[in-house]
Length: 462
Image (cartoon, rainbow, N blue to C red; front, side, top):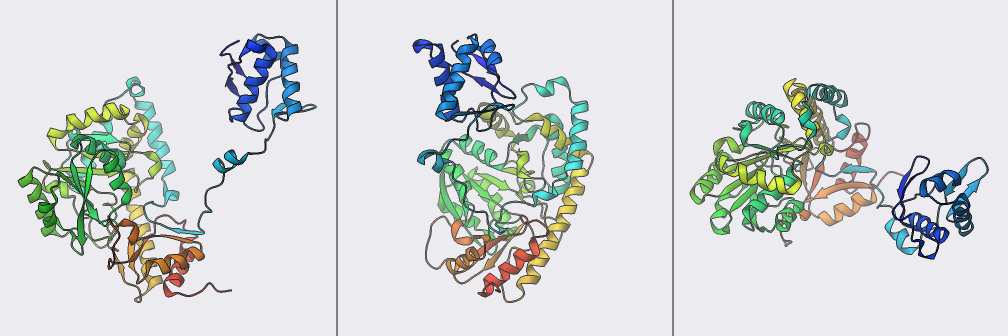
Protein backbone atom coordinates (compact mmCIF):
# COMPACT_ATOMS: atom_id res chain seq x y z
CA UNK A 1 0.00 0.00 0.00
CA UNK A 2 3.07 2.26 0.27
CA UNK A 3 3.06 5.15 -2.19
CA UNK A 4 -0.40 4.42 -3.66
CA UNK A 5 -2.07 6.97 -5.92
CA UNK A 6 -5.82 7.30 -5.69
CA UNK A 7 -8.30 9.37 -7.64
CA UNK A 8 -11.13 10.97 -5.74
CA UNK A 9 -14.12 12.77 -7.18
CA UNK A 10 -12.31 15.45 -9.17
CA UNK A 11 -9.10 15.09 -7.13
CA UNK A 12 -5.90 13.07 -7.47
CA UNK A 13 -3.74 12.42 -4.41
CA UNK A 14 -0.57 10.48 -3.70
CA UNK A 15 -0.73 8.75 -0.29
CA UNK A 16 2.10 7.04 1.56
CA UNK A 17 0.42 5.17 4.43
CA UNK A 18 2.70 3.69 7.08
CA UNK A 19 1.17 0.27 7.71
CA UNK A 20 3.51 -0.66 10.55
CA UNK A 21 0.69 -0.02 13.05
CA UNK A 22 -1.95 -1.56 10.79
CA UNK A 23 -3.70 -0.69 7.55
CA UNK A 24 -6.50 1.26 9.18
CA UNK A 25 -4.16 3.36 11.34
CA UNK A 26 -1.84 3.96 8.39
CA UNK A 27 -4.71 5.13 6.17
CA UNK A 28 -6.07 7.38 8.92
CA UNK A 29 -2.67 8.99 9.45
CA UNK A 30 -2.06 9.52 5.71
CA UNK A 31 -5.46 11.16 5.22
CA UNK A 32 -5.09 13.25 8.37
CA UNK A 33 -1.68 14.53 7.21
CA UNK A 34 -3.04 15.33 3.74
CA UNK A 35 -5.77 17.48 5.32
CA UNK A 36 -3.39 19.19 7.74
CA UNK A 37 -0.79 20.18 5.14
CA UNK A 38 -3.39 21.40 2.65
CA UNK A 39 -3.02 18.73 -0.02
CA UNK A 40 -6.70 18.00 0.63
CA UNK A 41 -8.34 21.42 0.74
CA UNK A 42 -11.54 22.20 2.68
CA UNK A 43 -14.61 21.22 0.68
CA UNK A 44 -12.81 18.54 -1.35
CA UNK A 45 -15.16 15.62 -1.95
CA UNK A 46 -13.61 12.22 -1.26
CA UNK A 47 -14.42 8.97 -3.07
CA UNK A 48 -16.94 6.52 -1.71
CA UNK A 49 -15.49 3.89 0.65
CA UNK A 50 -16.05 1.11 -1.89
CA UNK A 51 -14.05 2.95 -4.55
CA UNK A 52 -11.34 4.03 -2.12
CA UNK A 53 -10.94 0.45 -0.89
CA UNK A 54 -10.64 -0.88 -4.45
CA UNK A 55 -8.04 1.71 -5.45
CA UNK A 56 -5.88 1.25 -2.34
CA UNK A 57 -6.23 -2.52 -2.09
CA UNK A 58 -7.81 -2.56 1.38
CA UNK A 59 -11.13 -3.85 2.62
CA UNK A 60 -14.17 -1.59 2.50
CA UNK A 61 -14.48 -1.97 6.29
CA UNK A 62 -10.94 -0.54 6.70
CA UNK A 63 -11.75 2.43 4.49
CA UNK A 64 -15.06 3.09 6.27
CA UNK A 65 -13.43 2.84 9.70
CA UNK A 66 -10.75 5.38 8.66
CA UNK A 67 -13.41 7.80 7.40
CA UNK A 68 -15.51 7.38 10.57
CA UNK A 69 -12.49 8.12 12.79
CA UNK A 70 -11.57 11.30 10.87
CA UNK A 71 -15.21 12.42 10.90
CA UNK A 72 -15.21 11.98 14.69
CA UNK A 73 -12.00 14.04 14.93
CA UNK A 74 -13.46 16.83 12.80
CA UNK A 75 -11.19 16.41 9.77
CA UNK A 76 -14.01 15.17 7.53
CA UNK A 77 -17.74 15.75 7.30
CA UNK A 78 -20.45 13.48 5.94
CA UNK A 79 -23.96 14.46 4.90
CA UNK A 80 -26.69 12.26 3.52
CA UNK A 81 -26.66 12.47 -0.26
CA UNK A 82 -23.51 14.62 -0.38
CA UNK A 83 -20.83 12.08 0.42
CA UNK A 84 -17.72 12.68 2.49
CA UNK A 85 -15.87 16.01 2.29
CA UNK A 86 -12.85 17.63 3.91
CA UNK A 87 -13.91 19.89 6.78
CA UNK A 88 -12.84 23.52 7.20
CA UNK A 89 -10.32 23.45 10.05
CA UNK A 90 -9.63 26.40 12.35
CA UNK A 91 -6.20 27.87 11.62
CA UNK A 92 -3.58 27.74 14.34
CA UNK A 93 -1.32 30.70 15.04
CA UNK A 94 1.34 29.73 12.52
CA UNK A 95 -1.00 28.89 9.66
CA UNK A 96 -3.15 31.94 10.37
CA UNK A 97 -0.10 34.17 10.04
CA UNK A 98 0.95 32.41 6.87
CA UNK A 99 -2.53 32.81 5.38
CA UNK A 100 -3.11 36.36 6.58
CA UNK A 101 -4.38 38.58 3.77
CA UNK A 102 -1.99 41.02 2.17
CA UNK A 103 -2.16 44.67 3.08
CA UNK A 104 -5.31 46.30 1.81
CA UNK A 105 -5.01 47.40 -1.79
CA UNK A 106 -5.06 51.18 -2.31
CA UNK A 107 -8.26 52.79 -3.60
CA UNK A 108 -6.25 54.54 -6.30
CA UNK A 109 -3.01 53.14 -7.71
CA UNK A 110 -0.70 55.65 -9.42
CA UNK A 111 2.48 53.69 -8.81
CA UNK A 112 4.84 53.52 -11.80
CA UNK A 113 6.09 50.43 -13.56
CA UNK A 114 3.00 48.84 -15.10
CA UNK A 115 0.91 49.50 -18.21
CA UNK A 116 -2.85 49.48 -18.36
CA UNK A 117 -3.25 45.71 -18.66
CA UNK A 118 -6.93 46.12 -19.52
CA UNK A 119 -5.74 47.19 -22.98
CA UNK A 120 -4.22 43.79 -23.69
CA UNK A 121 -5.28 42.96 -27.28
CA UNK A 122 -6.90 39.66 -26.42
CA UNK A 123 -8.65 39.21 -29.77
CA UNK A 124 -5.51 39.98 -31.78
CA UNK A 125 -3.42 37.75 -29.52
CA UNK A 126 -5.90 34.90 -29.89
CA UNK A 127 -5.84 35.22 -33.69
CA UNK A 128 -2.05 35.22 -33.68
CA UNK A 129 -1.98 32.26 -31.33
CA UNK A 130 -4.32 30.26 -33.53
CA UNK A 131 -2.26 30.98 -36.64
CA UNK A 132 0.93 30.13 -34.79
CA UNK A 133 -0.40 26.80 -33.54
CA UNK A 134 -1.90 25.93 -36.91
CA UNK A 135 1.40 26.45 -38.72
CA UNK A 136 3.93 25.47 -36.02
CA UNK A 137 6.14 22.49 -36.83
CA UNK A 138 5.95 19.58 -34.41
CA UNK A 139 9.46 20.40 -33.15
CA UNK A 140 8.09 23.68 -31.76
CA UNK A 141 6.71 21.63 -28.85
CA UNK A 142 10.12 20.14 -28.03
CA UNK A 143 13.07 21.70 -26.22
CA UNK A 144 14.21 24.71 -28.19
CA UNK A 145 17.17 26.88 -29.06
CA UNK A 146 18.28 28.87 -25.99
CA UNK A 147 18.49 31.91 -28.26
CA UNK A 148 14.76 31.64 -28.97
CA UNK A 149 12.53 30.76 -31.90
CA UNK A 150 13.93 31.90 -35.24
CA UNK A 151 10.45 33.14 -36.23
CA UNK A 152 10.40 35.68 -33.41
CA UNK A 153 14.05 36.65 -33.82
CA UNK A 154 13.45 37.32 -37.50
CA UNK A 155 10.30 39.34 -36.81
CA UNK A 156 12.07 41.38 -34.13
CA UNK A 157 14.99 42.03 -36.44
CA UNK A 158 12.73 43.91 -38.82
CA UNK A 159 10.61 45.60 -36.15
CA UNK A 160 13.49 46.88 -34.02
CA UNK A 161 15.29 48.16 -37.09
CA UNK A 162 12.38 50.25 -38.36
CA UNK A 163 10.82 51.27 -35.02
CA UNK A 164 13.84 51.76 -32.78
CA UNK A 165 16.85 52.09 -35.12
CA UNK A 166 18.47 48.96 -33.71
CA UNK A 167 20.93 46.97 -35.80
CA UNK A 168 19.55 43.54 -35.01
CA UNK A 169 20.35 40.59 -37.27
CA UNK A 170 18.40 37.52 -36.05
CA UNK A 171 21.62 35.69 -35.16
CA UNK A 172 22.45 38.40 -32.62
CA UNK A 173 19.11 38.25 -30.78
CA UNK A 174 18.49 36.13 -27.68
CA UNK A 175 14.91 35.81 -26.39
CA UNK A 176 14.47 36.00 -22.62
CA UNK A 177 11.62 35.83 -20.13
CA UNK A 178 11.91 39.55 -19.49
CA UNK A 179 14.35 42.35 -18.73
CA UNK A 180 15.33 40.97 -15.34
CA UNK A 181 16.52 37.70 -16.82
CA UNK A 182 18.49 39.56 -19.47
CA UNK A 183 20.22 41.69 -16.82
CA UNK A 184 20.93 38.61 -14.71
CA UNK A 185 22.44 36.76 -17.68
CA UNK A 186 24.73 39.68 -18.44
CA UNK A 187 25.81 39.94 -14.81
CA UNK A 188 26.77 36.26 -14.81
CA UNK A 189 28.68 36.76 -18.04
CA UNK A 190 30.67 39.59 -16.41
CA UNK A 191 31.62 37.13 -13.65
CA UNK A 192 31.52 39.52 -10.73
CA UNK A 193 32.46 42.67 -12.60
CA UNK A 194 31.70 46.24 -11.63
CA UNK A 195 28.49 47.70 -13.06
CA UNK A 196 27.68 51.42 -13.04
CA UNK A 197 23.94 52.06 -12.65
CA UNK A 198 22.05 55.32 -12.83
CA UNK A 199 21.51 57.26 -9.61
CA UNK A 200 18.58 57.58 -9.08
CA UNK A 201 17.45 54.28 -10.56
CA UNK A 202 15.34 51.23 -9.82
CA UNK A 203 16.56 49.53 -6.60
CA UNK A 204 15.34 46.10 -7.71
CA UNK A 205 17.62 46.15 -10.74
CA UNK A 206 20.59 46.94 -8.50
CA UNK A 207 19.63 43.94 -6.39
CA UNK A 208 19.57 41.74 -9.50
CA UNK A 209 23.15 42.70 -10.29
CA UNK A 210 24.35 42.23 -6.72
CA UNK A 211 22.67 38.83 -6.36
CA UNK A 212 24.36 37.82 -9.62
CA UNK A 213 27.75 38.54 -8.09
CA UNK A 214 28.30 42.01 -9.55
CA UNK A 215 29.43 45.14 -7.76
CA UNK A 216 27.23 48.21 -8.27
CA UNK A 217 28.57 51.76 -8.39
CA UNK A 218 26.37 54.86 -8.81
CA UNK A 219 26.32 56.87 -12.03
CA UNK A 220 24.87 60.33 -11.32
CA UNK A 221 21.98 61.62 -13.41
CA UNK A 222 21.20 65.29 -14.04
CA UNK A 223 18.93 67.23 -16.37
CA UNK A 224 20.88 65.92 -19.40
CA UNK A 225 20.77 62.29 -18.32
CA UNK A 226 23.51 59.98 -17.10
CA UNK A 227 26.82 61.77 -16.54
CA UNK A 228 29.06 59.66 -18.75
CA UNK A 229 32.16 61.53 -17.62
CA UNK A 230 31.84 59.95 -14.17
CA UNK A 231 32.58 56.52 -15.66
CA UNK A 232 36.30 57.29 -15.93
CA UNK A 233 36.68 57.25 -12.14
CA UNK A 234 34.11 54.53 -11.46
CA UNK A 235 36.25 51.61 -12.65
CA UNK A 236 33.20 50.02 -14.26
CA UNK A 237 33.23 47.10 -16.68
CA UNK A 238 29.69 47.87 -17.80
CA UNK A 239 27.08 50.60 -17.44
CA UNK A 240 23.28 50.24 -17.41
CA UNK A 241 21.35 53.21 -18.78
CA UNK A 242 17.80 54.18 -19.78
CA UNK A 243 18.63 56.73 -22.50
CA UNK A 244 15.22 57.17 -24.17
CA UNK A 245 13.38 58.01 -20.93
CA UNK A 246 15.45 57.80 -17.77
CA UNK A 247 13.81 56.05 -14.87
CA UNK A 248 12.64 57.69 -12.64
CA UNK A 249 13.54 61.29 -13.60
CA UNK A 250 12.16 60.99 -17.13
CA UNK A 251 14.99 62.91 -18.85
CA UNK A 252 16.23 61.92 -22.30
CA UNK A 253 19.97 61.35 -22.64
CA UNK A 254 21.53 64.38 -24.33
CA UNK A 255 23.26 63.74 -27.70
CA UNK A 256 26.63 64.77 -26.23
CA UNK A 257 26.18 62.27 -23.40
CA UNK A 258 25.26 59.56 -25.93
CA UNK A 259 28.52 60.19 -27.78
CA UNK A 260 30.47 60.29 -24.52
CA UNK A 261 29.05 56.92 -23.49
CA UNK A 262 29.95 55.23 -26.74
CA UNK A 263 33.40 56.86 -26.70
CA UNK A 264 33.98 55.42 -23.21
CA UNK A 265 32.90 51.95 -24.35
CA UNK A 266 35.25 51.97 -27.33
CA UNK A 267 38.21 53.38 -25.38
CA UNK A 268 37.84 51.07 -22.36
CA UNK A 269 36.33 48.06 -24.15
CA UNK A 270 33.38 48.58 -21.82
CA UNK A 271 29.84 47.31 -22.21
CA UNK A 272 26.77 49.54 -22.39
CA UNK A 273 23.46 47.91 -21.38
CA UNK A 274 20.57 49.86 -22.88
CA UNK A 275 17.26 49.38 -21.07
CA UNK A 276 14.67 50.50 -23.62
CA UNK A 277 11.71 49.82 -21.35
CA UNK A 278 9.20 52.27 -22.84
CA UNK A 279 10.95 53.67 -25.89
CA UNK A 280 7.89 53.27 -28.15
CA UNK A 281 5.88 55.81 -26.14
CA UNK A 282 7.15 59.22 -27.20
CA UNK A 283 4.62 62.06 -27.36
CA UNK A 284 6.37 65.25 -28.49
CA UNK A 285 7.98 63.81 -31.62
CA UNK A 286 9.03 60.52 -33.18
CA UNK A 287 10.57 58.12 -30.64
CA UNK A 288 14.25 58.76 -29.99
CA UNK A 289 16.36 56.11 -31.71
CA UNK A 290 18.11 53.51 -29.62
CA UNK A 291 21.66 54.15 -28.46
CA UNK A 292 22.61 50.73 -29.82
CA UNK A 293 22.58 52.03 -33.39
CA UNK A 294 25.58 54.25 -32.58
CA UNK A 295 27.82 51.44 -31.31
CA UNK A 296 26.34 48.00 -32.00
CA UNK A 297 29.63 46.31 -31.12
CA UNK A 298 29.59 47.72 -27.58
CA UNK A 299 25.89 48.01 -26.66
CA UNK A 300 23.55 45.28 -25.44
CA UNK A 301 20.00 46.37 -26.23
CA UNK A 302 17.26 45.04 -23.90
CA UNK A 303 13.57 45.32 -24.66
CA UNK A 304 10.38 43.55 -23.63
CA UNK A 305 6.69 43.20 -24.38
CA UNK A 306 5.87 44.07 -20.76
CA UNK A 307 4.93 47.72 -21.33
CA UNK A 308 3.39 47.29 -24.79
CA UNK A 309 1.37 44.09 -24.19
CA UNK A 310 1.66 43.09 -20.55
CA UNK A 311 4.11 41.69 -18.00
CA UNK A 312 2.27 38.36 -17.83
CA UNK A 313 3.64 37.27 -21.22
CA UNK A 314 7.24 37.13 -19.92
CA UNK A 315 8.78 37.87 -23.31
CA UNK A 316 11.90 39.97 -23.70
CA UNK A 317 14.84 40.21 -26.04
CA UNK A 318 18.52 41.03 -26.06
CA UNK A 319 20.41 42.32 -29.09
CA UNK A 320 24.04 41.47 -28.45
CA UNK A 321 27.41 42.36 -29.95
CA UNK A 322 28.54 39.39 -32.09
CA UNK A 323 31.28 38.27 -29.71
CA UNK A 324 28.84 37.91 -26.78
CA UNK A 325 26.07 35.86 -28.39
CA UNK A 326 27.50 32.39 -27.75
CA UNK A 327 28.47 33.16 -24.15
CA UNK A 328 25.05 34.56 -23.27
CA UNK A 329 23.24 31.71 -25.06
CA UNK A 330 25.27 29.18 -23.07
CA UNK A 331 24.38 30.88 -19.78
CA UNK A 332 20.74 31.00 -20.87
CA UNK A 333 20.89 27.27 -21.71
CA UNK A 334 22.11 26.46 -18.21
CA UNK A 335 19.68 28.89 -16.59
CA UNK A 336 16.29 27.75 -17.92
CA UNK A 337 17.20 26.06 -21.24
CA UNK A 338 14.90 28.27 -23.31
CA UNK A 339 11.97 30.65 -23.08
CA UNK A 340 8.55 29.11 -23.76
CA UNK A 341 7.98 28.74 -27.49
CA UNK A 342 4.27 29.17 -28.18
CA UNK A 343 4.13 32.76 -26.94
CA UNK A 344 7.17 33.51 -29.09
CA UNK A 345 5.39 32.20 -32.16
CA UNK A 346 2.27 34.23 -31.37
CA UNK A 347 4.26 37.43 -30.92
CA UNK A 348 6.07 36.77 -34.20
CA UNK A 349 2.67 36.47 -35.89
CA UNK A 350 1.48 39.74 -34.34
CA UNK A 351 4.58 41.59 -35.49
CA UNK A 352 4.46 40.06 -38.96
CA UNK A 353 0.80 41.03 -39.45
CA UNK A 354 1.45 44.55 -38.09
CA UNK A 355 -1.15 43.97 -35.38
CA UNK A 356 1.59 44.73 -32.87
CA UNK A 357 2.31 48.11 -34.51
CA UNK A 358 -1.39 48.98 -34.52
CA UNK A 359 -1.66 48.11 -30.84
CA UNK A 360 1.40 50.20 -29.93
CA UNK A 361 0.00 53.19 -31.84
CA UNK A 362 -3.34 52.87 -30.06
CA UNK A 363 -1.61 52.66 -26.68
CA UNK A 364 0.56 55.67 -27.51
CA UNK A 365 -2.57 57.77 -28.11
CA UNK A 366 -4.23 56.43 -24.98
CA UNK A 367 -1.26 57.17 -22.74
CA UNK A 368 -0.76 60.59 -24.28
CA UNK A 369 -4.35 61.45 -23.36
CA UNK A 370 -3.68 60.26 -19.83
CA UNK A 371 -0.48 62.30 -19.67
CA UNK A 372 -2.42 65.37 -20.82
CA UNK A 373 -5.13 64.76 -18.22
CA UNK A 374 -2.44 64.58 -15.54
CA UNK A 375 -0.93 67.89 -16.62
CA UNK A 376 -4.35 69.56 -16.85
CA UNK A 377 -5.31 68.38 -13.37
CA UNK A 378 -2.07 69.47 -11.70
CA UNK A 379 -1.91 72.81 -13.48
CA UNK A 380 0.89 75.34 -13.44
CA UNK A 381 1.34 75.15 -9.66
CA UNK A 382 3.12 71.79 -9.88
CA UNK A 383 6.50 71.27 -11.50
CA UNK A 384 6.27 68.07 -13.54
CA UNK A 385 9.24 66.50 -15.31
CA UNK A 386 9.73 63.63 -17.73
CA UNK A 387 6.47 64.21 -19.58
CA UNK A 388 7.76 63.83 -23.15
CA UNK A 389 7.53 60.04 -23.11
CA UNK A 390 6.69 56.92 -21.18
CA UNK A 391 4.12 55.92 -18.59
CA UNK A 392 5.24 58.01 -15.61
CA UNK A 393 6.09 61.57 -14.63
CA UNK A 394 8.10 63.07 -11.79
CA UNK A 395 6.26 65.68 -9.71
CA UNK A 396 8.60 67.77 -7.58
CA UNK A 397 7.60 68.27 -3.92
CA UNK A 398 9.24 69.96 -0.96
CA UNK A 399 8.66 67.18 1.58
CA UNK A 400 8.12 63.63 0.32
CA UNK A 401 7.29 62.19 3.72
CA UNK A 402 4.54 64.72 4.36
CA UNK A 403 2.96 64.28 0.94
CA UNK A 404 3.17 60.49 1.11
CA UNK A 405 1.41 60.53 4.48
CA UNK A 406 -1.44 62.57 3.01
CA UNK A 407 -1.60 60.21 0.02
CA UNK A 408 -1.83 57.15 2.27
CA UNK A 409 -4.63 58.74 4.25
CA UNK A 410 -6.53 59.22 0.98
CA UNK A 411 -5.95 55.65 -0.16
CA UNK A 412 -3.64 56.82 -2.95
CA UNK A 413 -0.51 54.85 -3.84
CA UNK A 414 2.33 56.63 -5.66
CA UNK A 415 6.06 56.14 -6.06
CA UNK A 416 8.62 58.54 -4.65
CA UNK A 417 12.08 59.65 -5.64
CA UNK A 418 13.62 58.90 -2.24
CA UNK A 419 13.31 55.15 -2.78
CA UNK A 420 15.47 55.29 -5.92
CA UNK A 421 18.73 56.81 -4.68
CA UNK A 422 21.70 54.49 -4.20
CA UNK A 423 22.27 56.01 -0.75
CA UNK A 424 20.10 58.26 1.37
CA UNK A 425 21.37 61.74 2.03
CA UNK A 426 20.32 65.24 2.90
CA UNK A 427 19.70 67.81 0.22
CA UNK A 428 18.64 65.41 -2.54
CA UNK A 429 15.77 66.43 -4.80
CA UNK A 430 12.38 65.13 -3.68
CA UNK A 431 9.39 64.15 -5.74
CA UNK A 432 6.55 61.76 -6.45
CA UNK A 433 6.95 59.24 -9.27
CA UNK A 434 3.44 59.10 -10.71
CA UNK A 435 2.50 56.27 -13.05
CA UNK A 436 -0.48 56.87 -15.31
CA UNK A 437 -0.61 53.47 -16.96
CA UNK A 438 -2.04 51.37 -14.15
CA UNK A 439 -5.51 52.79 -13.26
CA UNK A 440 -8.58 51.59 -15.11
CA UNK A 441 -10.14 54.20 -17.37
CA UNK A 442 -13.18 54.87 -15.18
CA UNK A 443 -11.06 55.37 -12.05
CA UNK A 444 -8.36 57.56 -13.58
CA UNK A 445 -10.12 60.96 -13.33
CA UNK A 446 -10.94 60.40 -9.65
CA UNK A 447 -7.37 59.25 -8.98
CA UNK A 448 -6.08 62.48 -10.51
CA UNK A 449 -8.51 64.51 -8.41
CA UNK A 450 -7.20 62.84 -5.26
CA UNK A 451 -3.59 63.40 -6.38
CA UNK A 452 -4.24 67.10 -6.94
CA UNK A 453 -5.87 67.40 -3.52
CA UNK A 454 -2.91 65.63 -1.88
CA UNK A 455 -0.39 67.91 -3.57
CA UNK A 456 -2.33 70.99 -2.52
CA UNK A 457 -2.60 69.77 1.05
CA UNK A 458 -6.38 69.82 0.99
CA UNK A 459 -8.59 67.45 2.95
CA UNK A 460 -11.13 65.11 1.46
CA UNK A 461 -14.55 66.78 1.28
CA UNK A 462 -16.94 65.40 3.88
